[in-house]
Amino acid sequence: MAKRVEAANVTAYYGGFKAIENINLTVEPKTVTALIGPSGCGKSTFLRSINRMHEVLPGARVEGNLTIDGQDIYDRDVDVTAVRRMIGMVFQRPNPFPTMSIFENVVAGLRLNGVRRKSILEESAEKALRSANLWDEVKDRLGKPGAGLSGGQQQRLCIARTIAVEPQVVLMDEPCSALDPISTLAIEDLMFQLKDKFTIIIVTHNMQQAARVSDRTAFFSIEKTGDPGRLIEYDNTQKIFSNPAQKKTEDYITGRFG
Amino acid sequence: MGDTPQRSAHAGTGGTGVATSHEQPAGASARAAERFGNPGRPGGDLGGGGGLPRARAFGAERAFRGLTMAAGTTVLVIIAAIAIFLIAKAVPALRANTESFWTFEGWFPNDDPPKFGIGALAFGTVLSSLLALFMAVPVALGIALYLTHYAPRRLGNGLGFLIDLLAAVPSVVFGLWGRDYFAGPVADLSAWLHTYFGWIPIFGDGPYGSSILLGSVVLAIMVLPIVTSLSREVFRQTPTANEEAALALGATRWEMIRTAVLPYGRPGVIAAVMLGLGRALGETIALALTLGSTYAISFNILASGGNSIAANIANRFAEANDTGRGALIASGLVLFAITLIVNITARAIIYRRREFTESAA
Ligand SMILES: Nc1ncnc2c1ncn2[C@@H]1O[C@H](COP(=O)(O)OP(=O)(O)OP(=O)(O)O)[C@@H](O)[C@H]1O
Ligand SMILES: [Mg+2]
Image (cartoon, rainbow over all chains, first blue to last red; front, side, top):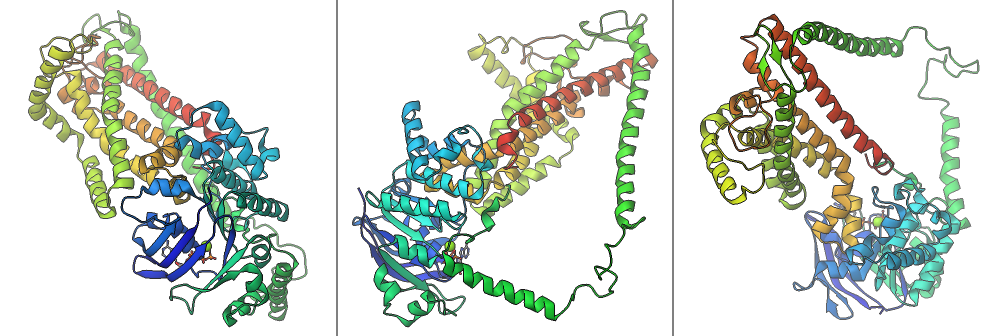
């Protein structure tokens, strides 16, 4: 089930602006990989290239090679919706569908996949909400609007929505930035569980979190504003946090950046 | 969209290490404030150790409040004055009417004894407006979605501008065009409809010409730009985050529109349709030129005939005597009531789902 993600010379543009340049990295199946780096270094951009969400923005494009288990996801013949179904994504800001109930939000992806049976939908919704540590808080008000939840609850709702369709790779863009420490721990637990089946790539600004949850860590950085982001170092998390090969990585991790 | 507390980014995520590094700048800025005293407020009379400053008895705040309140009251007074005037004119005519105002099919208020009924006019008004919306709304929504979500941006803006221009064409132009050029094709269409779909009662026999169908098509063209440009505004405001959420779940573009754009835009679209309906109900000159000015209730939309309250007022005002004017004013009051009901219904529809749209609106 879990897939290997390989990026080779990935470069992404916003119109004329080159946001990331020549990213090479391989994410092994059933691992958690953390992307860290200063703000604006292109972590989100890289993440969005992996499920082809980058190209949604007008003028945005990706060059280079991105494969999932050897299959080129930017191949002309590949159905982009199939790619996105296989590679789920949790965004930096919670974005539940404002017009939908909590339940409908969670099953939105299943409905898009053509699941109609009420019993299946209910079962999957409960499972996903439990995994996202939200079930107890919302089980009595599944029919209420998703936008009526707190920010942290909304983010967990979005996580539930993403994992309800059981994607093979889960991309998370700072999923915990709006969460309290308890929910954060719950999400981290969730990542440990998901790792059994899925490949997980997470962007985080929280060093402790990266150290806690990830197997491997990729450090991105930029020379100066306006320059494209580059991958500085990519290694086992343990190595990155104890004995990084690059001086820049060490500076960033110890808080001496910039 | 209600911006949820998502901005509290990074708060409470980290362990102790992060917390201490946050304390530093906070303390630093506090120290800075101490050093510079209270720079934004010279003068010294504010917050200078004593009590809080007293509310000013006569400030811009109060003046402005008085002004807005006066404006609001003026509107109410004007509305009340108009209503009183209209009712005062209408009541004597209604008293003089020797037939039932609601059911009589005919309009002879200038005769002695006066005979007139609103039934056929109200029927024609509602029927032509609904037909117009039935034709215009799907097209308008299609155009709006195309402009916002399919067309290249330049093309979208250009076409949008053209559509807005269409809204600026005076209705008399539409009316003349409908009567002089469009009546022919519509008559051909009517004959065709009757031949092949004659078994549906609304597609009855001729003579074809100035029919409800012609009036409705012209009305449809007139409400199209309003509904299109309002829906376009509404669709354009769909939060990108929601569109992306749908796409990231593997939605095709149309599925994305169905899951994110349409539900989000629903109240706005309803409002747009209601504005279109309001315009159609009140449309005067275009219908006066294209309808047959008869006073019979008929579901046959192809045959010459049909009438509407506003068109009838335009056609008959010049020849009307005192009772005649009163009768026309009474019909105007009925039109007002119809419009009011439409608006209240629209509000009720929007209100019923407010729980889901409040945060969205
Ligand atoms: N929609 C956009 N249009 C143009 N430039 C963009 C857009 N989004 C991001 N950028 C630019 O691309 C660069 C990388 O942005 P990105 O969002 O990937 O950074 P990030 O590493 O995720 O930062 P953060 O940690 O703050 O989320 C930045 O210089 C940013 O200004
Ligand atoms: Mg980011």
